[in-house]
Image (cartoon, rainbow, N blue to C red; front, side, top):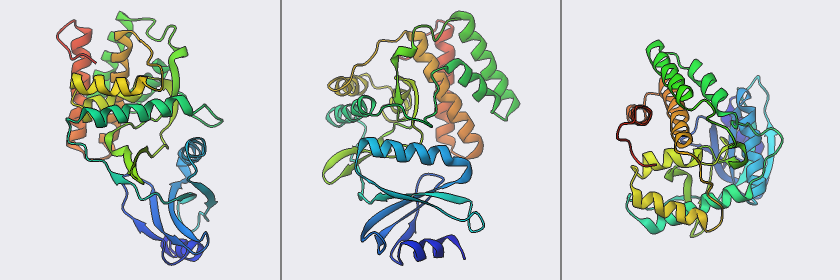
Length: 288
């Protein structure tokens, strides 16, 4: 029996697989078992932590959680499943220059940081220097890994106590903040997709959004911060730590694009690394 047949037998013939941006398996449709439209999100055995994190954050933030299930490993390696209410999310109409929408996005992230509290099973990257060192060793291309190791040495040489007195600024991070993870639900703006949540330095949730979606536009970044500060406190952190957050984010992009062919995303990571070098060398670099 294949996975799709198993899902149909357990949840109803109208629950069908859909294409999704993640590497999980996802299904949506009216479930005869639950007598409502559901969204099923299935995780591989190796991604049990992501399954737990998605479940726990949804239970803190909203009322989408309905239940969970576990499938037989003989049928599929996607064995952990969440049953969530289907919210029929719609993409927001963001054209890259709307400061009012950006303000609302900041407000949503502020609510997330203020509302979601740490829980058992939540990953932590508060010890960011150790996480960066480990991440660099996971890069497969030797030349790239050596270049990252040199950048790490440069950061530590110039700022040996890079994480000093910063743990108090840690929050539960969303872990993948981008415009695509903000959706319109029942005419309201909402935040989705929490499987990468972790505890870490607050600013880490700003970096990819500022680079990828806002193109480091000062007006948009300021509007986002203003929205954020209407509901949450935005900690002042040293400039070198902000750039270390950029460095960490770039490493994640480099690791991802070694597995998935995404040239534009790879270029984004390389741009971040170039900007980090400019900062460390005292050259002109963007204001973040």
